[in-house]
Image 1 (tube, rainbow, N blue to C red):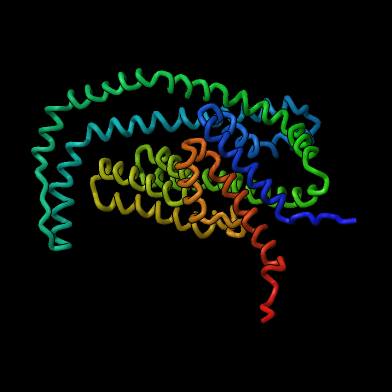
Image 2: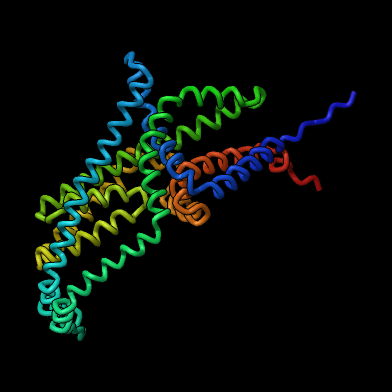
Length: 359
């Protein structure tokens, strides 16, 4: 009796087709999927906390509700704390702009010319006069944003709806996580169960260690930057440091934006080169600690999600799927990394690779 040999690549081909179909669906539904994907990622990060509460004899629904409320409180509290400080800093920058121009013209540029033998110049009087005479026009020009926002009313309503839906979706994801995990487990064909569970476990390990470790990195780095800027006496330094910490998930972007904001704030507030050096020192120390101590210990290079891989994933998925792609970038990067390792190992074990030339 003839038995047809099963092609070992069939399940990889089927998996690739399913992945492509899912990506097409995500692309076409990206507008409405944003809160669902964001809630699913947050639920994945917070699910261990809910599990710990359930092990303390707390009901799953109550534990999910408490964790959701705690997450909302933390986010809202952080926003209410940072935004007023940033607004105050922006207003102070606007008021001290003439002083800044005067500092650049009479102190900074002469110092640069003397040290580097250049001939830079700046007509500060013209700039100050222009800002003074046209301040009302400049501020009035900002109000022109309102008609633009009115024309984008549908997009704003959708954004507001997404923000309203996010905590509700987060609660249901947390409450129903075990049921969905069990349902997914039962759908897996039994002959592939062991292999799928092994690969899924590796994906879960890689993704969970990266996301949860990176969350701790963001908090710690934000506290380092914010605390350091506060110690050197920079107004709104803590807010700037926390913003830089939240952006550290994109390698080097958080430090760059934070350094830029802090430099501008220090130039307006201190007006001296020593003040700038103190701010730069905070970011130098913070960047060294983040690169060589904090990230290696909390995230670990063994995971394989290097800065190059993260940047490429963010840019690629952002280009393909927009904001939804940015949300999916890190999870998909972890999945692709594990699958690439599996394919590489399978290739090295294959007869095609191991067969020697018989000629």
